[in-house]
Length: 478
Image (cartoon, rainbow, N blue to C red; front, top):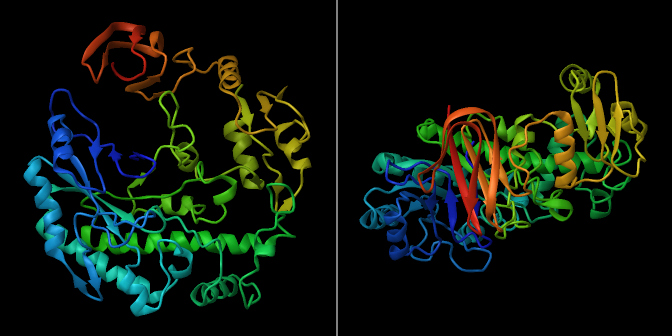
């Protein structure tokens, strides 16, 4: 899975992609919604040859065109300005002949479409138009026409495609569940297909926003609201999967296809329920989507911050959350997790909804620790250790202590952003100074990739002195 970071205004977007060999090798791409040849030239001189192109049809949240240097490509039913599309490639190749492109494909409703078809603006109200067969038909025709043109004329320089729709082209729905004739009809069909009574209308805000138990809805008392929001999120994911399948009919998996989606870590209590990103597991499992992009978190993106991604990558790869428990999940936990001397850290209220009912007693049944525990509590179980945190966001120092007690490997003692896999270690520091990094096993050589410095050889640990601030990337050679 690739990941992407972006600035607060999404004016400069970085894509993780390897360019052709050049000293030093660069691992980033460049995009701006206000194309500037001089800036593009500077990136090319630095060895950055991956460029994002966004032939937009709609205005940004600021009211300005996303791609102000070029007119829209989609100008009416079946009317496409492919010469404009071609210029967006040739203009950049003239500055950087080595450029490779990732195309953002704008699926939002142009102004003319809303006027002609009488439909809603998908940029602000994706939920009102997502179930429209007319919008899907028209947009599918546009998407496939653009892809056929690009694949026929520019495929040698295109390394990826991106499906862009909804608010800020990130599949965000600002409709907040409000009604509309198309949405109402889709909701009624959804309920009837699942053996439920015809709801006739969308539940009012007083019902769909009601929560019985703090952050938790009651599976019985809040059943209508639960079903309605599940329908809403499935409507967005169904739309994504519909257009992904349409795109693959043309590109046939020749180049990766991606989108911005799954902002579970970012939307929080004021947005997570409404914006259509909670059916991520189904989208993630689709064979038609290869890449998930994510801006860096808006809450910790200052120099020295961890940033992180809006998408909970590892959790999503395991396909599930643990507030809801059933017999299958209990058995899986007993077999794979709660065994073998492991330390298991439980977040807020695990298993509180068990077998279709809200029941706080099930938290203790799962963790061995009462739900009303007021502080971080540890208990030795039969062959494993249970640690329960009644509050979210366990401090880094506590996590480090628990990890050390559990025998987990700690790369560095300094509390700074650090990312590691079997081959690379990235470290970001605002204070700088000497750092000691302990490796999980001995390696032949450690090289700082950006500078090309060899920092250690034949060792299982190394020391380096960091500037303030700086980011370093170490490659470990076995």
